[in-house]
Length: 180
Image 1 (cartoon, rainbow, N blue to C red):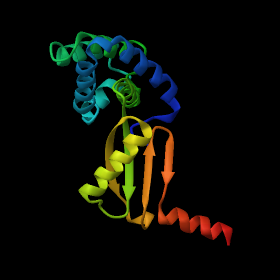
Image 2 (image 1 turned 30 degrees about the vertical axis):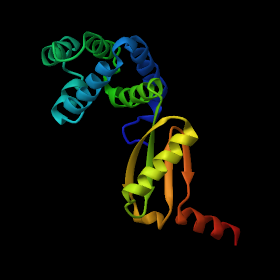
Image 3 (image 1 turned 135 degrees about the vertical axis):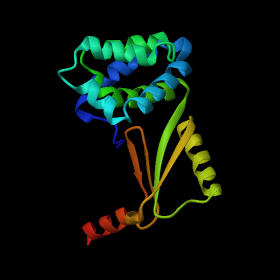
Image 4 (image 1 turned 90 degrees about the horizontal axis):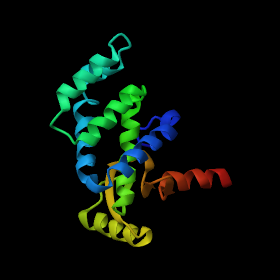
């Protein structure tokens, strides 16, 4: 599970993300770039997070700061969307909205993000072979993200969407232990 996703607000975040992706169809790449920029610039900066989540700072001040910081640097639709989040008190779930929006954009572009965990680093040829197999199975362009974790002992743990394919030795040992 992505650490940027707030499960309790996921349903609401998906609605906002879907509304943004539907309204941005004519310039989806530009809006997607804006959203990534905002995520990096604002939500990776502790001072910005504190400012936008502080209850004493007025909504007007938050909006003015947002406008002064981003006007002319991002698409007007994106700026309006951020203002809506501020108006509706949903700015705090931006990271979850962003992750849901990325999924929407991937679906529009027929792409699938796949997270692969292995005990050791895979070679480039193994990565390419895995990417081709997954692309063939899922009928989508695959965006692979790799992570190493020695705790799985061997094999692969593959996650995409809400699916998990556990081909790890650790899982096989656990299943064997249950059956003995």
